[in-house]
Length: 588
Image 1 (spheres, rainbow, N blue to C red):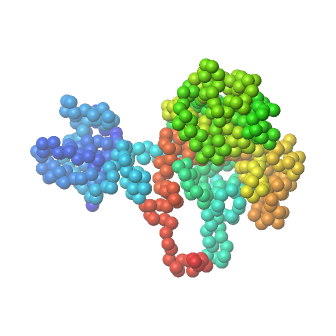
Image 2 (image 1 turned 180 degrees about the vertical axis):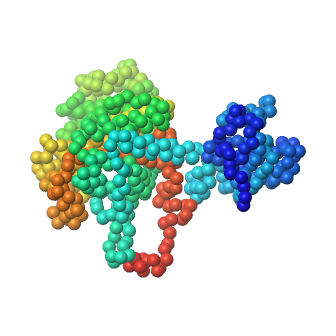
Image 3 (image 1 turned 45 degrees about the horizontal axis):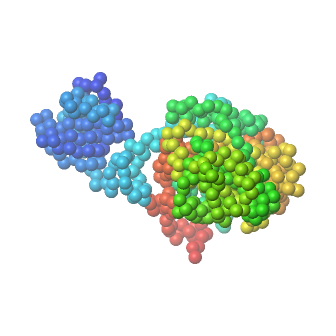
């Protein structure tokens, strides 16, 4: 079909174009018939322009416009004019002009869409995902993908300016244990053998450091076969970074520069550098999370020292077993009813807590069913330590340390929501969390696991505890947190074969198992591996937060559902029996 090439897009015509002959291409957004004069709003990625069809200008064009429907693809020719007095639309950038059309060509017709192509949408997400190509026509979705594009371009420009080179790493690799399930890809050429899709390029970027690349980055797809949620997908994108001959401070400084650029260029915000830093232990004790949200107060307070020697058995057991008694002050909540307090108690129990101790702070003293167990000294100690005033509410949880602090951290967020302390327009809160444990103990399997991954270097001074007391070893690891969301994580790596073998041993891998799984990396370390470290940003999550969305599906062009399905192309799907036979696979 012949049609004239567009002279302008649908978002750029202004008053300075009045009198010009123009050609526009786009989709029909709105059709209005006002007393015989047809008004068509034409939309493309750049905006909306109104075209006017009057019968006396071109009767044939007017007739075609009259037949047009929403989402028809059209080519329009006409003259830009000033809108008649009183017809301006300040909501549109093009709202002071329209195009008096003298020709229209319908390039393609369209069925009635299953939902309106507009931002204020009440369609179910499954319907949006089934017709994602229509959902992506909405300006909001296009803005999300444009923002993501700008972030990618900013990252590439930033890293190039700091001496990094972008290197693509393989998508088909060896299956290695890195924490989540691998996606396995059967080999047709090698019967019974499998590739894995990379959970991250971790081993490859370390090998690039051995290869002397010095500074590497990559915006890369990663794959993890794990349960999904709003900020997790089976396939996701990382900004992956690795550097040689650096210490932790070097990496934090450069990454702060990248984050500064993101906020400056995307949001117009100058963030204050250097960023705040917390140790893992401090983050857990004060906020009950290794990714704390510091946009509001409500700090948790350890009450162990107040109740040392307490006659209250629950507290005594916690102190004797190296557990924790953690308190949270909810200001102004001292008038909570018994029903409201029961709701909070049920909330804590659903988190796994044995119960919740609540104490109302009154003018005449503390009020709670547990007050009979506390001495006057303990009561006053609580008031002083928590800074409690009449009208406040004290909440206390007790039990094993990490589990109880995590439960109180979740309760802290719940109280912040109830008190409306999390303001959507608040300044972004960024911080580093440092000094993580290298290992975490799992009660079910009765063994240690790497808290980050098995290539993370221990703190040099803690290496003597690797065999005798792994729980004492701290990692040279760091996480970057934005508004309570981890957006990046990394570490200084092990670059020495002997220390790497020691790490594998602590994780329960025999030398033979380590050689089978990671022999290629261990062998590389014998040929002069430099000290190195790196970090990876969760690009989807960061884009989600920059766009002010609640789900990463809003900033991914073609995401999967929470059950890992693609409703649009119906994957995963059955495959032909012949394909399975070629891959030496039989489905039972």
